[in-house]
Length: 99
Image (cartoon, rainbow, N blue to C red; front, side, top):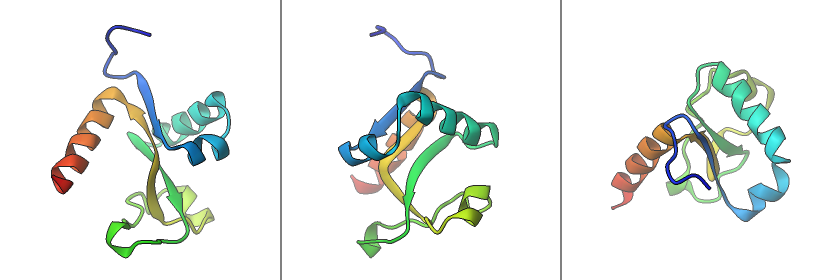
């Protein structure tokens, strides 16, 4: 493990279920790089239903080709991928909303 990480090193925040269904680390990195190449800096898992209305957020990337092909329109924070700098910004924003 590196003592320090560069701002563009890729990190994955995932719960156990997402680690089972997402695929291999290679598959995940390929999917992330494809979406990143289209201009998105963070990739999050999405789902079809919203079990808790106060915790649901519409997919912010509604113009992404994925949204047109799938009905998964709610962000699921069980899987979030991005580089160090963008994930730190994301986590700071999320934490500032709940603290």
